[in-house]
Amino acid sequence: MSFFTQKLLIPTIKTAMLATLSIVTMQLMTGCGSQSLSSNNNVTAQTADTDKGMDKKEETSVNLVTTDSITTDKIQAITVENIADEKMVSPLGYQKLSFGQVVTPELLNDLGMIRAESDNKQCYYVNNPALSYMDQEYGKRASVLYQIIDNKVALITIRDPNIPFYKDIKVGDAVADVMKAHHDELTYEVDKYAVAGDYYSLIANVNFKIIKENAQGEWLKDENIELNDKQDKLPIQIEYHIKGGQKLNDYRIQATEWTTDNKILLTGVVKSIDIGIPEAIYLVEGCS
Image 1 (cartoon, rainbow, N blue to C red):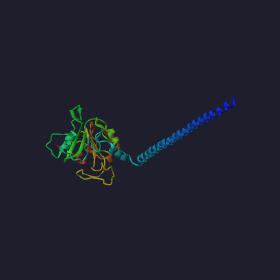
Image 2 (image 1 turned 30 degrees about the vertical axis):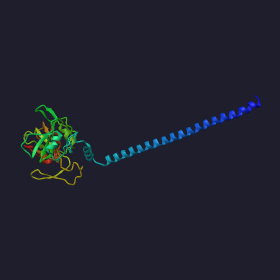
Image 3 (image 1 turned 90 degrees about the vertical axis):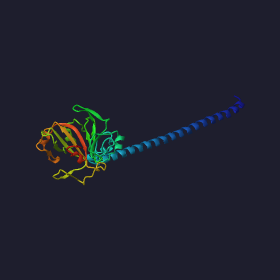
C-alpha cells in the first residue's frame, strides 16, 4: 500500500471510529437514563404499594382494636345500625317506617301501604299488599303488619316465615332457638285465652331493663343504660308468640326467675313475632 493511500484511509478510520464512539456513548446515556427512570418508577410504585399496605394495616388495626374493646351487645347494636331497614325487621323499623315515625295518608300512599278497615282512628293496622304469603290455615295473608297508635308506628308484626328478623329467628323456629338467641333473658306469659298454655309469649327487652313494676304492670326504664342513639329514642321490646306449648306452673315467669325444670317444659314453635314499644306489646286485644 502506498503512502498516499495510507493517508487517505487514516481520516476515514478516524471518522468511522468517532461515529461509532458517538453511537455507543448515546446508547450508554440512553440506557442509563432509561434505567434511572425505570428505577425511579419502581421506587415510586414500591412507595405507593407500601403506603397502601400501611393504610390497610392501620385500618385493620383500628378494626381489631374496636372489636376487642366493645361488648357483644354493642357489636350487635352497630350491626343493626348498618342494616338497611328495607332488608329485615329490626329495632330501626322496616321498609322505611321506623318506630315513633308519624304516619300520614300521603306517606302510606308513597310507600304503597294500605290501611285495614277499622273504625278506630287512634289505633289501626297497615300493610304492604306486595308482601303476602299463603298460610295453611288462613290462606293468603299480609306478611308484615304495622300497628299505628296515635298516628305513629308502634309495632311491627312478622307472620311470614320468609321475612328476615335481625335476631336470626323466624316464624316456625323452635322455642329453644328463641331462648338461645336471647341468652334465656325472656319473660314467659300465658296467652289470656289459652287456658291449657298451648299459646304463650316470650318477651325480651331490647334497649332497656324493667327495674320495677307496680300492681298495674307498668314498667320503669333504667336511665343508666347507655345505648345506640337511634335505638334509644324509644323503649323497644320483642314478643314471640308461641303455639304448641304446655302450661307451666306460673302464669308469668320473669327473666330472672327461670329454673332448669321450667326451661325443660318449654315446647312449641314461633307463630308470629312482634317488635315495638311496650304500650303496643302489652295490648291484649290489639287495636280492637
